[in-house]
Amino acid sequence: MQPAASSPTLSTGDWGVILLYLVGVIGLGLWLGRGQRNTRDYFLGGRDLPWWGVALSILATETSALTFIGVPAMAYGGNLGFMQIVLGYALGRVLLAAVMVPYYFKNEIYSPYALLGQAFGSWAQKAGAVFFLIAGTLAAGVRVFVTCIPLQLMLDWPVLPAILLFVGLSLIYTWAGGIRAVVWTDAVQFFLLVAGGLFTLIYLPTLMDGGWTAALGQAREAGKLEWLNFDFALAKPFNFWMGMIGAVVFVLYTHGIDQLVAQRVLACRNVADGRKALLFCAVGIVPMMLLFLMVGVLLWVHYQQTPIPIEIPENAMGKKQTDYVFPIFMLAEAPAGVKGLLFVGIFAAAMSSVSSALSALASVSTMDLGLGGRVKTDAAKLKWSRGATLFWGGMLVVVAFLSREVESVMNAAFSLVGLTSGGLLAGVAMSLVLKRGPAWPVITGLAVSLCGMIGVHSTGAVHWPWYTLIGCTMMLAVAVPLHLLTKSGRDES
Image 1 (cartoon, rainbow, N blue to C red):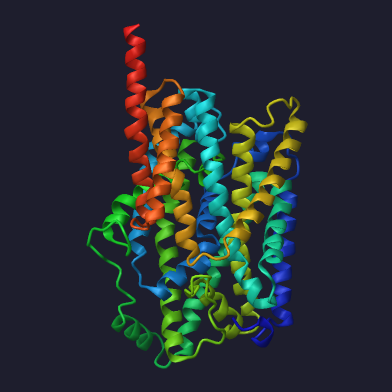
Image 2 (cartoon, rainbow, N blue to C red):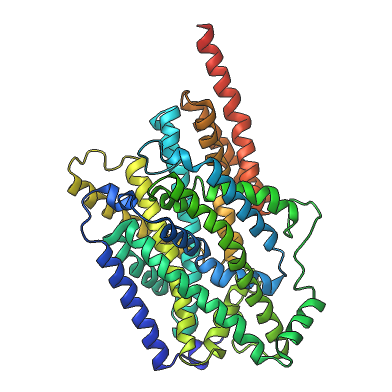
């Protein structure tokens, strides 16, 4: 890649916009951290957050830098086929709103893994927590890495300083403000990243001969607007069955079991508000993903007509890292002033995903693993929780640095989540259906599912939308017979 110094740079006005955003969002997060007394305030926001704020926070978290950078890259290198997965996302949210949310409010719980503890004992809860922490840290680390791409382009920075900057900025207000700061800063950041996507969608055709009509015609001729594929396959490309089966099951995990999103639903005031938040997300995710996919399509058309101003770098395997395409356009071709706003959109997406991961990881390690269990006073527990937030910030730095050679951040992040998602989804489902039992069948099932999914992933023959369903099936195939065998033994005695 050519050095950023020889490429178009940000103006003083652009830097002013970025600085104003950073100061504003950190100041807001610190202000929202006032008056916290205990871990309930820190991790659940006192269970007093409005549903619409929670919904915007969820959308911002799942949009993240993966969407702002990774989704346009998917369309740039392919077509609109990812929309089949998005439709499954929407359907999965509707199912969760109807079925799962009431269980969150039956008792005072801090994560879905507490349901494992209530049914199968503390060791099952801790096993579930460990599985989330493993996959959550790996996937969040990949998200952190992708946020460093614009800084590499703007300043020609090495990866590590860029990672430290993003994690450090997000740590400041997450450490001080907890989930309340995360939710409200996410809500602000949601509007910024959507504004960036909308501007690009409107502006790109003005750079092309023939405008919108010609751009869409060229994209259609090249097959870039195709999105439906009814051929059933476990491997790439995306297909309808991946969306309606695999992606639905995947969302049952990401929005029902994954603490990254579940923590926000738990912060709602009641069951009705939790349902409203998820239903709003079900409606909002479709146009949002289509927006960023179309940005990728228009970027492809644009760079068929115009040479790309900065060479797209290759990874160690010699493959083009198309995740750089949108940041390259923003740096080289967006108007002065607006360029700063577009980079603020990336920073907003980045800090949203980092802060959400920090809060979720700290919550699970503190409350589910009970690492601060010997601390007695509310003030001491709050201090311990903030210390856990700092620790996970350090872990994200390590994982992000190790993620720098991935070909596609979207596929890498979702694949890593999929290694444990099926086992955790099956475990929570068992806790709701079977009600009571020993921990060891669940723990055995989780271990077998993880090992099996590592094997599936290593073959490369199965695409990530199927991972959760396959892992869930493995877990149930092992854990349910063991549970029934244990129950049968108790009945005979």
